[in-house]
Length: 111
Image (cartoon, rainbow, N blue to C red; front, side, top):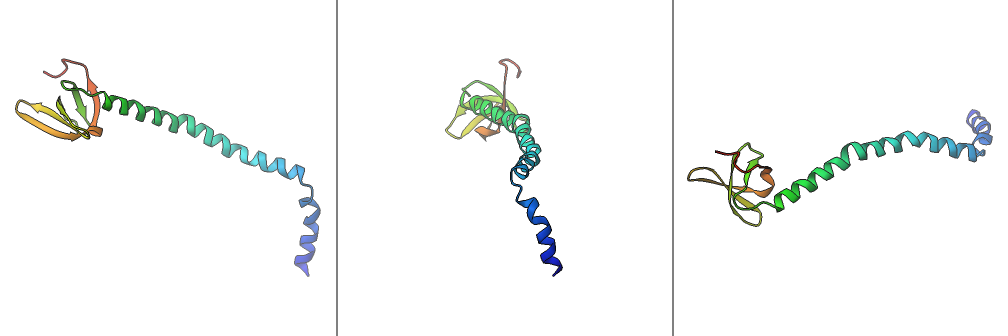
């Protein structure tokens, strides 16, 4: 008996329709704005960084001086499809994945 009277009291407010739709859109606006800001502040710069890293890895050539993710500095001696051979000291050559190369150093920076 009490429940049916409570539903009866809220029925005219639910039937309003147009005002309720505007309040729903207004309530979702902060959420949409958060996603837009998140895209421009975090997602887009990360995608740009990934694209630049891929271009750098594709442009690797024999003789380039590189820094790796592990902190090794060396000169590229051979390039295979998925790997790079880096000479870190005279007579010491290390085979790395291409993605481990984080930076191409200017020529002559390793001596």
